Amino acid sequence: MSSTAPGLSLLVVDDEPDLRTLYELTLLREGYELETAGSVGEALEHLARRRYSAVITDMRLPDGSGLDILNWLDGQGRPEKALVITAFGSAEGAVEALKAGAYDYLTKPVDLRQFRLVVATALGRASAAPPAATAAPPKPSTAPKAAPPAALERLAGQSQAMQQVRALIEKVARSMAPVLLQGESGTGKELVARAIHDCSVRLRHRFVAVNCGAIPEQLLEAEFFGYRKGAFTGAAEDREGFFQAADGGTLFLDEIGDLPLAMQSKLLRAIQERAVRPVGAVTEATVNVRIVSATHKDLGAEVAAGRFRQDLFYRLNVIQIRVPPLRERIEDVPLIAERVLTRIAGDAGVSPVPRLTPAALSQLARYAFPGNVRELENLLHRALALSGGELIDDGDLGLPESLLDDSQLGALDALEPAPSGSAADAAPAELPRDLAVYLDEVERSILLRALEAHRFNRTAAGASLGLSLRQMRYRMARLNIGVGEG
Ligand SMILES: Nc1ncnc2c1ncn2[C@@H]1O[C@H](COP(=O)(O)OP(=O)(O)OP(=O)(O)O)[C@@H](O)[C@H]1O
Image (cartoon, rainbow, N blue to C red; front, side, top):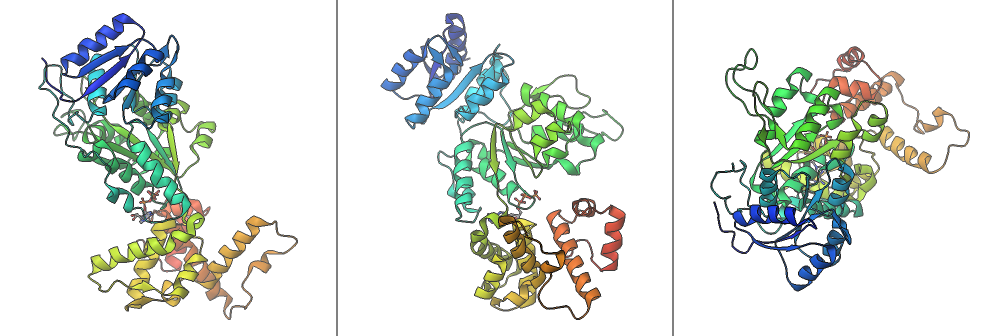
């Protein structure tokens, strides 16, 4: 069946005439306008003459590589989407192409159904459910042409680090390449993932966020891939999994480092095959999902320790974005604080939006924020409740001076090795009047910071401090800390 795709033109580059014909027939039937080339040189001649909607190129060409074409497109700042066809089993080729700016890749031998889908997706023509061979022509794109700046504006901060992160988001949003977000807890990784989705042509489809560490191991497969009615006790009806829910959109896999090895293999397979089989189903279904994953762990080290599959790491880590901790971009605190206060005050119906005094701001600048932006949010929540007025002063922040001193000393320690001082040197100049009360205050504040940094998960917060859950519970009870405090 032929459909029209007005204005959508493709350049197909392959040196094998049979394959060129195969691609040509497939794409003409989809209604695209098409030209072909058999070498890098020929392709560049075509490209110099006119523009296309997309370029589909084989990696290996007689006079060079598909990468030469990608680099030329990039160098000329050309808008064509590039799709690359790589040799079977050449994961390196695919990764290299994606890094060089390819929108997506296909592996030989090319599965024609997948081929049509990948081209349609690149051109923004794919609907959420991939059309079956006999289905109606794909719907015209409803996706916007330009990235909505609002998606990036949600990430407040003018530090160089944040500007770089925003620039990278815009760049990677144009491709299908998997992105790995690396950063401490609370730095804004999920916000970055959402911005990638919102800036991409996938905007009209769903962004599905999954916390891999929060799902019991025995439920992982059913949650990820769905299940059929009767697949196991309690499966009263068919249910779709995260992959199906995110079809056409983005699947955000948070805390990917927490995924057990068995599930890592299944995930790798789904990503490679672009298909999933629900538990209890006989057949696989194609899915068109962009994967963005995030971790606070050093995944390279996890691979070395045998806890993370190297091949999966390789697949997920095509493009890495490091989201820096807040203490490395402390100059962003005023802007982020303003943004957060506007939101909290709006939610609470408080008007006008309270402002931070210069003393409060300078106190925040001296704090290390182990829980990053999430901790800043929690701190401002508390401060707003305490201040009750139009101004939030340093006293309302509830940051003990000892913590500020510690962070300052910590920063100095990092610069120069401590000569011969003892631990006592790090204690505040003024002696506390009641040591037990003072130490309780320090302990309480540390436990709260750890809890905030781990979303009040006591096991994780305890582990980060070298405490078992029992010890953590005991200390929290002794200091009267309730889960959810703050
Ligand atoms: N640059 C920023 N501007 C405004 N708000 C931000 C910024 N970065 C993070 N936030 C806010 O901080 C909170 C934590 O961010 P987010 O959940 O994205 O962090 P995360 O790194 O995914 O955390 P975790 O690793 O614990 O899942 C969110 O409420 C988010 O909206």
